[in-house]
Amino acid sequence: MKSMQTRVVSAAAAAALLGLAGCAGMSQQDTNTAIGAGAGAVGGAVLTGGSAVGTVGGAVVGGVIGHEVSKDDKK
Image (cartoon, rainbow, N blue to C red; front, top):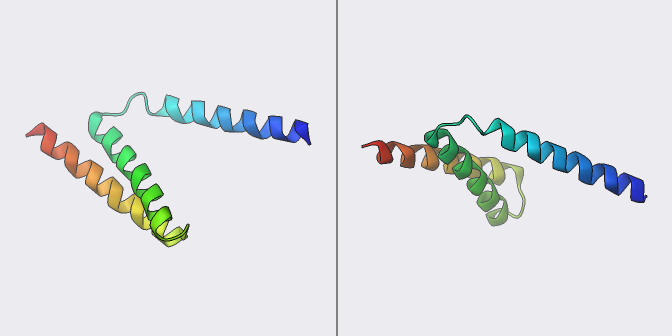
């Protein structure tokens, strides 16, 4: 059982490192969109009790808000 836990933790750590490496070349607008989508997904999940529709809806709304905030910074 301990071996399985070690494998799961190792896989999660590898996935996190690959995810962070993929964000290295993003523009500020892309970064804000991704952060907004992540925050919106968490907020949507919390508000709807973990509903998939709420999570996806929150991610969409958060991503749009993050994208639009970046546009205002360029003006």
